[in-house]
Image (cartoon, rainbow, N blue to C red; front, top):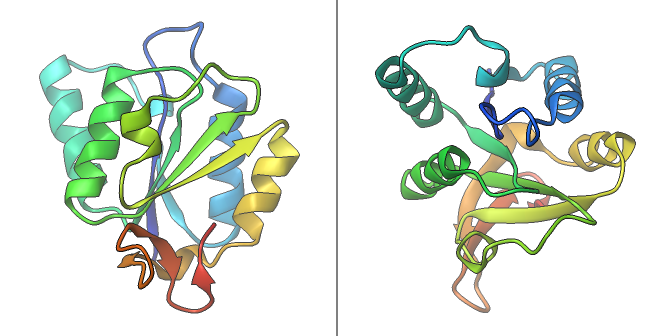
Length: 154
């Protein structure tokens, strides 16, 4: 079974995107993908959260990150996924502030802008999420998530 990790701001209520998180969980679970969503778990100690989330990222086949607003924890989860060659699908609202160049330029990621949750569902519905892998581009040498079934994930 494919496992996905859902990354997004949690502790700052004004940055949380609970409707986005619910949409991701519903969309992926309807496709038979198991989703680890720490946004809906009980609060724990910082040490327990760190260990739990690091382990969950490492065990995931892909990471979906909401990056409309900066979050140190989200950045750490993205970097951990990149280091482990786990594909990262970045989602940001089309009217969000500019995204960090470090995140925008990172290998192993694909960026999607959205203006509605229906658009998010549509983007995810078009992808072969169960076969994403980070692969090197033959033309430019960058690494990006690609489906083994259909080519580029983006």
